Amino acid sequence: MSTPVPLLDLQAQYRPLRDELLAAVTRVCDSQRCILGDEVAALERELAAYLGVGHALGVSSGTDALVAALMALELGPGDEVITPTFSFFASAGSVVRVGARPVFVDVDPATYNLDLDAVRRAITPRTRAVMPVHLYGQAVDMQPLMALAAEHGLAIVEDAAQAIGAKDRGVAVGAIGTIGCFSFYPTKNLGAFGDGGLVTTNDARLADRLRLLRDHGQHPKYHHALVGGNFRLDAIQGAVLRVKLPHLASWTEGRRRNAARYRTLFAEAGLDGVVGLPYERPDAFHIYNQFVVQVPDRDRVRARLTEQGIGTEIYYPVPFHRQACFASLGHPVEAFPVADAAAGRVLALPVYPELAPEQQQQVVSALADALRG
Ligand SMILES: Cc1ncc(COP(=O)(O)O)c(C=O)c1O
Figure 1 (cartoon, rainbow, N blue to C red):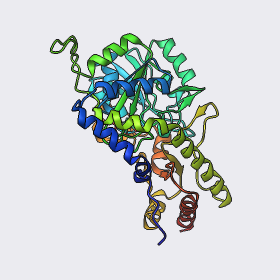
Figure 2: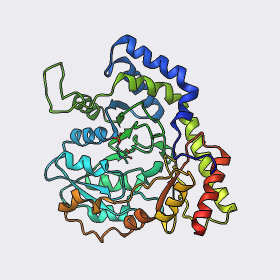
Figure 3: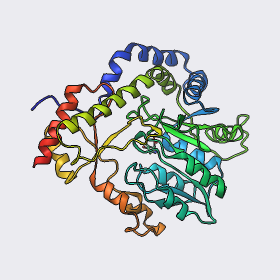
């Protein structure tokens, strides 16, 4: 068997930055200032500039970013939040965590992002917010969604966990809606050495609320105007992310280059009609957190790739409307055919920036073999 190709190789990113990363971690250890503090404040300034957004606040995870955002908007029992049924669990889980009701909508078959017509149909007098998810790193078509939200007085909580640096019409996701939420989970394009996240907003009043909410609503210390949570980001994560952030743009270019190379390789192999390649919205800047193809007989094909040492993953095999924990919401299981079809066919291939052309050729050849049976 040839050398395995992992889905993601974090060692390849770590090795050239090792000394700098260890120095940054040592700096935090020597300071013994372990939570928030100067490192996180500096990271927040740097990320706000990178994203072109007024306020950026480090939080403990992407999940907590979503929970804090919904809390800042004072959503709770009786409120509905529209979210795509095809996403990572946290998009819907966070809505339930604050006591509100997630209302699922189907996705667009080309982008896997929420279907705007379905959103329009799902609006009720109880709808308070929409949570677009920029899935796999491709921006949702935000302009019509923002117009619809304005028409109905709805907040937009962008789940940008997979999409740091992605843009819609030149504007970074997370800087478009009411609040943006990012994840620094290690597999993300900007990954920490553990859990971490970010909330962003251009609204100074919401930024103040989010700052309070991430630290139990206290200000000054032990005086609580709000009930928040412990959503604080550790200083070690801040320091690590500050070393990595200057490389993010070139890593993104690497992912985009690899995505383009896959398109060429699949065409050369005569597979572009058999393998469904990711669609790139012309107005969007895709950052390819994942390069997701659709293949027939997916589970068998995936098993063959695993045998050949090719790392793949299924994001996501079970849409929200088929999850046991959401059964009581009463969504008809047959109502989301696009998400159901995608869940049965999607397969994420390695696309990380350090992936070599020969490795991509190996992936495509192995996929061609697997498809032949
Ligand atoms: C779309 C989406 N939303 C939310 C999250 C939650 O982020 P975290 O794992 O940092 O809590 C993730 C992480 O995988 C995600 O992909």
